[in-house]
Image (cartoon, rainbow over all chains, first blue to last red; front, side, top):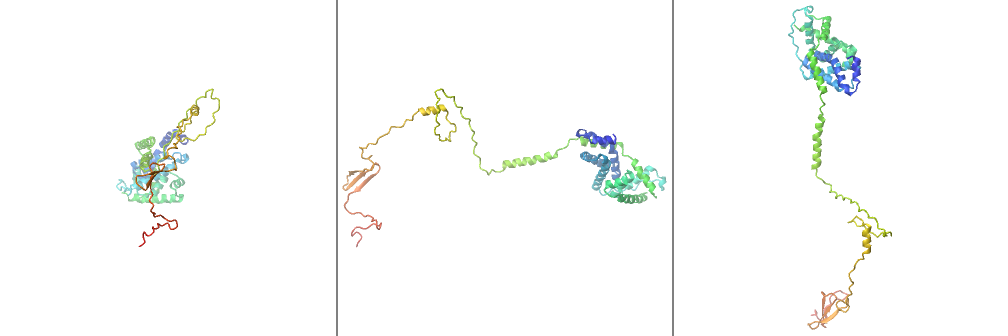
Length: 175
Length: 190
């Protein structure tokens, strides 16, 4: 279903509410689950967070602006992830025994580099991790990230910079 | 091991290409839709039921302090008036009626006609026997008794008999001036 189709479905009456919602779910479930997965580092927790997000979407279905559905989903996903992270503190310890066959980054396969970065992400503070996930992984514009996070664009750039520097330090400590 | 910005950026963008497994997405879809299609649990109904039951019990158990209301009298429909006969063309003057609170049903016309024609029977008037001296009210009869010096005065009431002594000796009497009994001459003088 296209975006126009989804918006039209959202504007339909209560009888087609479930149909419209399912269309939205199919269009965005992959993105929401992926972001939650990056934020939480666990697919099971990510599924719980994504489920909360979509149940909230269903509850506030009539109040969500169809034009800003992605921003709403990002923000709600971040909030759901924060809730799960607070419940499961202390934070998951970084598994430092990631196998790296070579000393040179160039020699490491891309998949292994991704795995290392994904593990290093878990060590970042929540806010920096959220900014890195949205800006660097999801490719959301800085202004949009600022709106989602409720901070200024300058703060977004600052947190992206600090987060990347912290990531590099974490990665350099990995064997 | 050194990481430059390009390597880190490349690795981060590569994470976007890593997607969750399709099974995880399918499971998420199924869980969400099952929750959405599940009928809403009306928990508030179950919260209201015990409260309402407690209120009803409290109202029933609470002691009544107000006096009981008198029983409501059920108004009976009046007996329909019979159609007047042709000879009852004259209008019946309305009798002076005293409201009878015990019988709210007014008599119908037939009953009123019967009452009007029926004259009451009064008991015969008895004339008192004036020859009987006892019955002559206010005139007592004086009779002699067996005791000398005593007479009996019979009044109109047979239960009242007055015995009168005809002794000549003076009797103590009260004077109106002092309202005290004066002794006879030489009675208390020593």
